[in-house]
Image 1 (tube, rainbow, N blue to C red):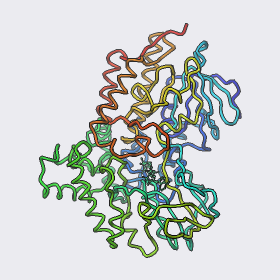
Image 2: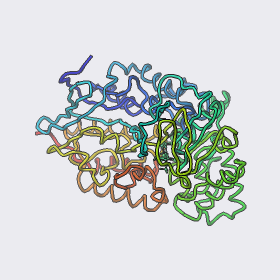
Image 3: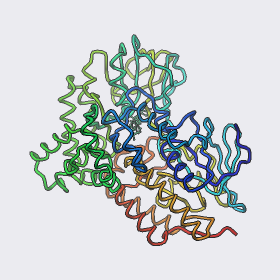
Image 4: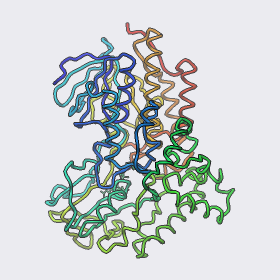
Length: 545
Ligand code: N01
């Protein structure tokens, strides 16, 4: 089936969790909707990221939809942190349970989206030649969906098996009897390294910048515990929405368990902090960072967290040189997304695993048979690239998006993304960006942020209808204010010190602007709710002439 000049009430790009829920809401509102998806199935990030060991670093019971109490009661998660296959099953279950697939076209990559001002329509094209239009266009393209290839000479010369973590093949990849090399030590690598190490003959990890990682303390979920938790699901969900237990959720029934032990690092002495961090470390998960509330705002507090993790790395890794190389010193803890691992550091004690510190022996080039370092050649049968993404703006730049007066989004964002609330943009009327740059998105549990944005978009469309308006757009003043506010908020944190993908620092030539909103899901929701209560302050709703 192919769409030719097909007319819809709304077009959604992407069938990940954002696209799925947006479709569910709009169909319920009586909209005729089409979803275009590049993959041959739903799931978005969980469709593509099939690398070994891939699992969520937010807890399953929190990283799931809350919009339907029956759905949340009936779905059974098996582990504290769900694996990629289980999350993909869940996404497929949701699509089937609500009969959403008939509205989706798969294996269609939207290549262009142009706003036709005279008709007040978004006209889209796909790589399969589909053409369609709708007054409303919704981007659900994900924040981390465009892989970044490393800029290393000779990358295509390699004659062995080569895989990209975020584009992992669907067939089974075998490591037995193979010399495997992994480039990168971000979340994807840190999850896959312990799994590859189990069967590879030899695994060599090529590390440029070490990352901080905390243990997941993963395990099967206890049925009685889950039953008790689900009795209070509504209350837990409410907490997550407002960030009361921090955005990563909480696995204890007693929500107080995860409350910070101090607001400021200065209020807690070294001994007490050590005890508190030890308890958080044992408990596992990224909520380790909220043991003291100013860990991401105060360098001294952060340094104490860093020192604690350095000790843990030295405790876990037998070889002191390897341990020292694994200790991050170039950035504050959490300023690059903290990793959550299962036995990552201990993996370096295996006889078949070695670490190459690229800061000492950089890669000169990739060869037909391996990697040429400054001092030696490492022979490889398989190369795994876990080298990250062109985050947050990369997926937008892949589409030729044009607004009023044929203005290209690429030009508007030439110095960094500009949005109102991460949700809409001046000169791009009726284009909504779910978890776009300028919203909490990647700094939050994505499911919480997705639901909030989708509900807000649904309310916004209802409001426009009630007003008799067909054109929705933020004002220039509100967009400028939001960008200024978001940058100011970020500057009060340690995040910008991370030289991370949050800033676009991992992509050559990309403008360095801190992209996600650092005010937290609760603070952000409060602002959005106020804006709505004040008659959608900062948005203009006009009739199409
Ligand atoms: O990517 P990354 P990722 N030579 O950008 C290295 C989410 N996620 O896919 O830092 C050598 O973090 C690079 O080194 P450096 C999560 O939000 C979530 O791992 O540039 N190395 C770095 O070590 C996460 O933060 C889950 O010096 C090169 C690595 O590649 C985000 O995705 C799981 C290089 C890239 O790390 C991205 O994580 C996985 C070169 N030329 C991912 N180029 C969950 O659990 C790059 N590197 C939900």
